[in-house]
Length: 83
Image 1: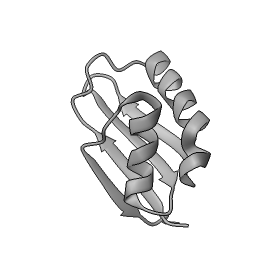
Image 2: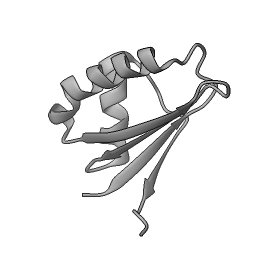
Image 3: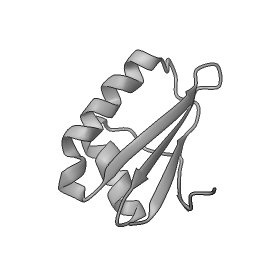
Image 4: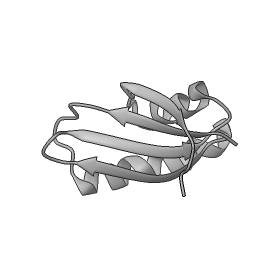
């Protein structure tokens, strides 16, 4: 299944606690869209969040965030894992 990285920029008030809550909500609805969220990274000072998932399409990856907590990525790109 393809891998996608979604990028959220200028997220106000991003903290590890808030991201953990958002991820839990993603996990609760991801199966409905055929998506599996794998990992996330963030930079609190920059207000940037990066989420990696396996998904059948960009649209499916976007749908999980939208349904789970209303988060909308600024960009979603297909990526390949390097060695």
